[in-house]
Image 1 (cartoon, rainbow, N blue to C red):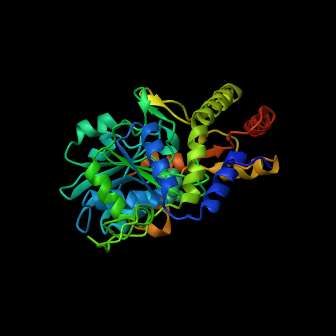
Image 2: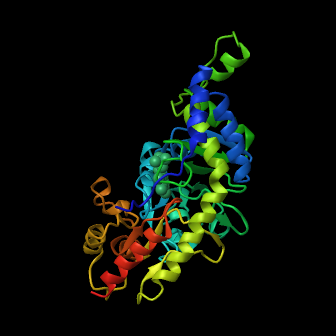
Length: 373
Ligand SMILES: *Cc1c(COP(=O)(O)O)cnc(C)c1O
């Protein structure tokens, strides 16, 4: 069975983890600090604050922005459900906006449609790695806090710079379903040093001096707990893997883009099939290679997934829509026609670093067989 995704590891990751274990310090420590510096530099951000996941990174971004009860936060329904959940974690209310069906992303216009006097922030997702038009949203809605959900977008570019370059608040994921993985893990990148310092405290119970600094520098004065914080720490075990993976990122993106270009050639003759592609304003890392079926395709999306499985291809339904899940049942702020169309008619094809051309040909053959009826 050809998997939809498979992480790319070498012996370097194993050695990095073994070194951390040998050092005797496995919790948040020097490797986390090194990963933060390297990642922030790679995405041209001022600071990186490593945390336990993108979900906790997003939650912390909302806390840092002062989002709380009584506030509304605009999010795409078409996203992994964590994008909406973190708004509830912050005590605020998610408001679902529709997307541009070409990119899967919010636009200034779809945000406009659900604005209210209580709107405090927007979580702009770079969905499946396709960069959202950040400048357009910021220019149209200067009064809103902008949090970028860049969970999928490590290695994507926007107007010639990395996604996240200069971002006020951006959140990243290192779950194995993403390009760069540390097993689990997340990162906040941001420009403001004081906010970064507060984020570092908040991820560690609000402590005035981190446990790692206490250990490394022999701090003996008792720490203070300056505000109510969280345990959102990353471990040095994860960071050691993340550092090695960061060194592989450029190669991973190049390989994915080459395989994606090959999919575009192999599937171009299936009538009406739409494939995820670069938008005008940037490039995608092809975190997920999604295709959307034309109305007259001989079988429905779910039947096609079953058909592909019988041909040795493990594909997935397209990006989910949170407002259609029981957790958000009955929550409707606006009609979401593009979201509902894309989630119902799209699927994600296998794409991973070590995928062979023969495997990709097998996927293409199975799709052609389905298209032929
Ligand atoms: C994967 C993902 C998340 C959650 O990331 P975790 O690190 O698993 O918490 C959030 N938003 C989007 C868009 C994602 O794809």
